[in-house]
Each structure stands twice: as C-alpha cells, then as structure tokens.
Length: 513
Image (tube, rainbow, N blue to C red; front, side, top):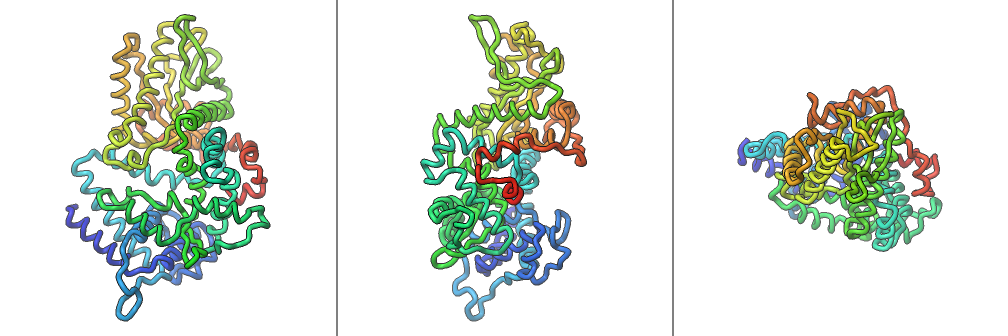
C-alpha cells in the first residue's frame, strides 16, 4: 500500500468526521457500546440495530472492537468541523444509525491497514505484532475484575503512593474509586447523567464529586483542543495517544452538566491501573514502595495458588564476607528450586508501548529487564558453584521475570534484544558461564493470574518452560497454556479488597466488578 492510498483514506475519514456533531456522535457510540455489552435500553437510540445485536461478539456484523471505537472517538474529537454545521445546504452525519459508525470504522480500518503496510516496508513483522498486542490484549482481558482492582489499590493506592495521591488530588483513594465506580455504573447503563445529581444517598458529597471529576471528566471544548494536540500527525493512527485514558468522561452543555462516557470501561481502567497517572510524579520513594509491594503481591499470590509447591520470598545466601540475595520469589518442591522469579513493577511509557523502536524510546525500562535476567543468571551460576547452600536448584530450574506491565508481550525482537543486553552484562562477570545463561520466561502479572485461575501449579510451570524455550517460545503465557475453561479457581484475595475500599460491601462488589 502506497502513501497515496493512506492519504486517500485519511481524507475520506476527515471529510466525514468534519460533517458530524460531537455530542450526538458520542451518544451513538456509547449506545452501540452498551448494546454490545448486553444492555437493551440503548436500542431505542440506534434505529437500525435489531434485538439480535444485544451482546454481539467479535465476528458479528453488529460488533465493533472497543480498541477501534476508542480510536474513532479520538479521531472525532481531533478533526476540525466545517463551518455553519447543519445550516443551509451543509450536511450532517446521522447520529441515530449503526450504519454511520460501520462506514466510519470501515474507512478507519483501511487507513490503519495502509499505515501497517508502510511500516512493514522497513520493519520486521514481529515489531508490529508487539504493537498490536499492546493495543488489543488489555481490552480482551478487561479492567473490571477483582485482581485488577485489588492489585491497583495495593500498588498505587496504598503506602506512600496512596498518601501522595491524597495530598496531590485532595481526595482519599477510596473515595476516588467510589466516585469512579458510580460513574462507570451509571454511564454504563444509560446514555448520559447530570453532573449536578445529588449522591448523598450513597455517601458521596459534592466536594468528593468535584475532586474526583477533576481526574475523570473533561469539558468538550478542552477535550477537542487537547486531543488535536496529542494526536498530531507523525504517528500511526492506531497508536496515537488517547484523551480517554486521561479523561474517560466528556462534559457537554454550558456548565458541563451533561456527562457522557463513550466507552464506560475506560472509567474502570482510570481508577485501577490508570491510577499510575496520578502517582507517577511521586518520586523515588513512591516508586520504591510500589516495587516492594509488587514483589510481596507476586510472592503471596504464588504462595496461595502454587500448592503443593513451596513458595518463599527473597533470602540471603553465601559466606559472611560475600553475601548475596536470591531472586525475589523461589518455587520449590521438597528437594529443589523449580522456578526462580524476578519481579519488575516499572510501567511502560506510552512512547515505548507503541513506538517504531520501543528500546530506543524507553531504554532505561528495558535495561531493567536485562538486569533482571542478569540477576537470575548470577543466581544459577552461584548455585552451580555451591554458593547457595542449603538451596539446591533443579537441573531444569526455570527463570521467570514477572512484570506489572506488558513490556515484552508478543514482542520477540525486543525480548531478543533484552537477552543480548543481558549477555553483555554477564560477559563482565567471570563466573557466569554459558551453561548459566538459561532461557527466561517473560510474563505479565495479568497472564500469571489468568493461567493459575484456569490451571494448576504444574501446568503453570510447564507453560513457563514452553514460552521460554519450547515450540511456543515468545508466546503469551496464557496463549501457550492449555487452559481448562471449565475449571476456574477463585481469586485468593477477594477478602482483602474491603480493607482497601471499606465501602465496597459484597453486594456493591458484584455491581462494581
């Protein structure tokens, strides 16, 4: 596909979006999203969608992937409008037909495909696979689940991070999440809500609302200005920043009284993993606490799910004059260590997530991955030399790096570059031999949770080995794992969520998650 083809589709999309009005189009998109989500009420707003469209899944003619909807909303907001909209002979897109969105999405997908073709003329296909994974897989897993909520509260809403959040926003984290849960629930069920609604019946004060709205809600005019700025040309359309990740709710009306959420699930994202946006400026002390809590979380989660194996945290070993630390988590049977796990809590920058060359955009983050590999290899070398006694490693002990973010998800090229960097580091240490430089499993904590939710300790270890060096090398752990979808274990920390969100009684938890 030539650049001429890309430019033709870009002009077609911009011409149609310029002939639209934002609020009715946002209402149409939110109605379609609601119908896909299984709600019947929005059908009245979309004249050409039948009842069979309710709950439409991927493959149905009435289904539009949410990642595509998100891009469409951003393109809608970034596109300048024609003058005198709807006056005289000017025409407007109909905002009451699914066909309108279907046509726009068709053009958008053709534009994205044309840009893919241009990118692949000078890049390996595995770079593009990595970017596709970063865009699509989080949507497939979803944000409204207990692990995502608890883990986000623990990492970004407690300790020094929680204190920094409250000091910088003027609202306690539990209250912020409560307002977010209200917005997600209300906007997920209907087209719009009134910003001035009295919420005293659910113990939400006007002060709490406004403090939280400052992080959830953006006025329409400001949203257009910011979106045009952050989505300036120069990057692939699908991988440009999204205003909805910062502000998932748009305010319309002279006083911003009409609140609409084109994709309500992004509200849940904002008060879970999106809390990172609020604490990223907290400094070294905040991030040290996040890293420590992530290590503890991974250790406790594996301890709860890896029976009959023994799971232990970091320990000290070696002679008194040369003490070393084990990897963050060790999984052992009665005789040997079967898996050695390093935990990395650092988040990816947006630029690294969707860049043409992620390792250039976030070299420090990928350096941390390489250092994690080195730590595992050093431990293997020390075990070979007998320095780890009384710890003994199994001959096929698997090294695993668990990340809080999707650094190397389906990104074979980046993984190979990380291993190459680790090898350079290892070359500087005389005692790390080739036999110690074992293949490493890279996996995100979401994937670890999914595999152990639908599998066993043994199937988890087998999947780790498979993606490290087997036929499925470089695959996502959950894709390589032979999950039994009819078998599901409950999340072990359901009972802890209330300690971080005291208002979340069991019946409210069902509505929130």
